[in-house]
Image (cartoon, rainbow, N blue to C red; front, side):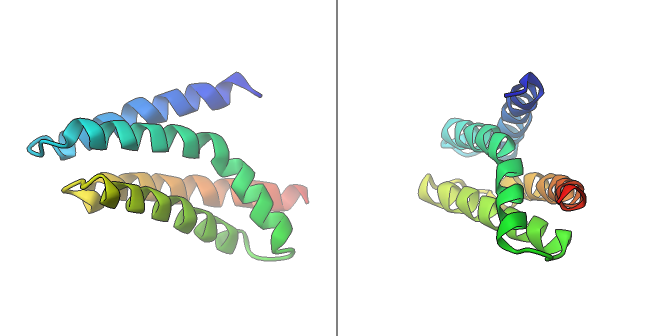
Length: 117
């Protein structure tokens, strides 16, 4: 695997984990929420391209936008449910920026993958 993927994943862990900490600073659960968001961002960064390729192969001749939206819906749902389970207080504000960045990244990658196939 390429080291850039892991560097990006570490950056995602730090960025989104820190974001979660500060957005939930008044919550006693802020450490758990920030650690969960960091780990989720790390893993999603590593596996998102694989999911895009999978959906691109599963839905042949589908729009790159459909593939991107489906990818983000699944990954965001997992993160949302995780935050519900750990009782994060500001779930919307915690995950909204990550969802936006994930959607932009997914559209870019889905278009790139669809051109290759």
